[in-house]
Image (cartoon, rainbow, N blue to C red; front, side, top):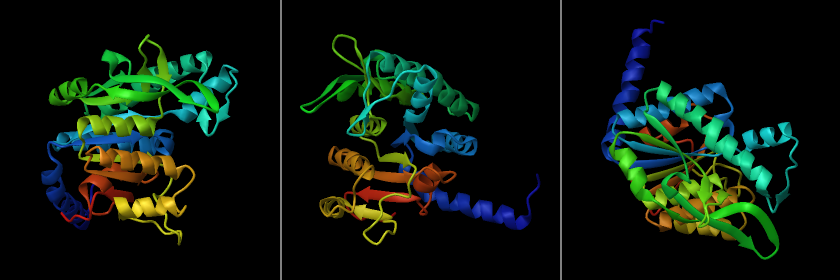
Length: 292
């Protein structure tokens, strides 16, 4: 399809505006938690894959950690396995854990890898069990038993650095491995945050089905510092499902990650907009205010 001169000029302008961001982030690691609507809509899946491929080809090192809650739920329903939630967490019994491994570590992981490779990203699919990438233990709480839900003890960064140095894009299913070889279901946001910490990533992007953090007035907060986020949590403005994502971002920053963004994954090319333009589509949490 041909484009007009005006369209060509606009496209060139957008590319030229990305140049300072490419210079800034070239050679840096960006960890992306991929989940929500982005994984269910064909247009969003394609735009995400192209975004990741483009980041790679301009010298940025993307790492993808993906969820898959809806897909797991669909398979459990198909197999007539009852799903239970306690305190908002899926109870993962032995039968459910088998389905989690089958869906996250199998079909879904390979679908994402195939889509990224179709766009030229040279993706490699992994679970946390590969080379003991994610060491985990059973999540213990006094008032609940979540089964094979785990919390992360250690992320083996050397494997990921080896892949990144070789020009590959790691795509990680958040399944951890325990001391006795048991599999554990890990929250994808948490896994992405811990991977970003282990790699000392420049950016952590958490794709969600919301606009980002909303203030008391209901308006999107586009950029905020750590101290202000603590105040939003203390006042109850940040609550519900946004609270664990925000805490994940804060933990990553405390461990040395450069910045974390809770990103609206419903927007096409949200990743590129966040990394290579000044028009982000979410809430960026920084150590302090910065300018390019």
